Length: 390
Image 1 (tube, one colour):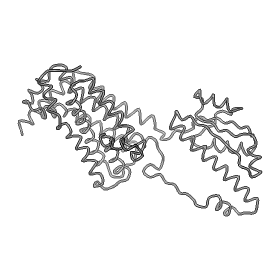
Image 2 (cartoon, helix red, strand yellow):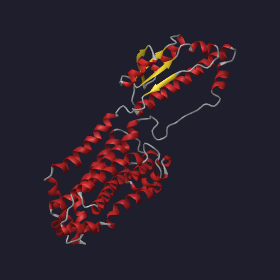
Image 3 (cartoon, helix red, strand yellow):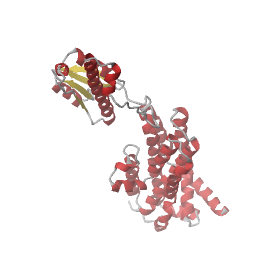
Image 4 (cartoon, helix red, strand yellow):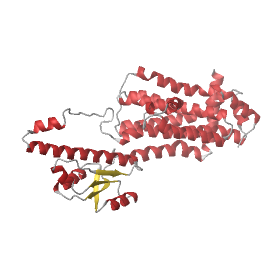
């Protein structure tokens, strides 16, 4: 055992020497993750977009329509920046990107309302900008409902109903809505807890593949194996250990940044998330080493890891629930390490559940760490034959 530890130490020093000779390691392991940490958190430092430009088309031009537009403009997410004379002008402005939505009140709206008819109010959003369109759709829908309720309330009170009677008829069941885990509806909390580890995971896989395949490409793989006395497992551990330490430190940095400085919700304490982050580092390395063993080509291995890393963003379930995906995609989601990290984050950081609820997810990450043992002999065979496929 002591001999193996000595060889791992020698291999680790050798890998550090190789890393210092290639600036790409510094860029990929430290500079790029730090840039992502700062960029994404400062990009969404306000938490929720506000004062999104919107337009209006008020063909009715009455006190009621003006009141509706004033109330809409008072919403935090919506800012009415321009009033257009007709529908075509407003549509052109939205297509040119000057506004993200517009509210259309046709002529005769107030008159129909006073006659107890059912006037139509329309609003249009640019769904090419998902977040902005969703927020403005919510504001405009809410404003339309408030306007309808306000007219109904005034009509009933004019007929002799009291305020309580009118509100009881308009809203027989009062809704008390609470957002669990993120009551501020802060997009930074919603996105960065998954975006930052996902970006780091992608860099981990790319660096792992690059470091292994450069041994094959440069013809130094025999020397690498010789330092490990022909034991490919020892060779892999010695090569990846310095990277594991550096990436684990980077994981600690983003955890301290999110939960210590930015004050993101952390109900279970730092230790469960720290364990999950370090295991995600090693699980990403394990998956990348598995790919490197199976595909003896730097270009194809990097391409597959990049594809897998990018697919992790939508399929892990933080933006679209996995249970609502087609059955094939639901089954595929089990093969992404980020999926299990996200589930640990939900259980531990957001809900503060007992660690026993997340044991299966930690075990899955451990499985990804052990994954290279299934095909690492292929890597040894490739290394000994000096056959590199470009």
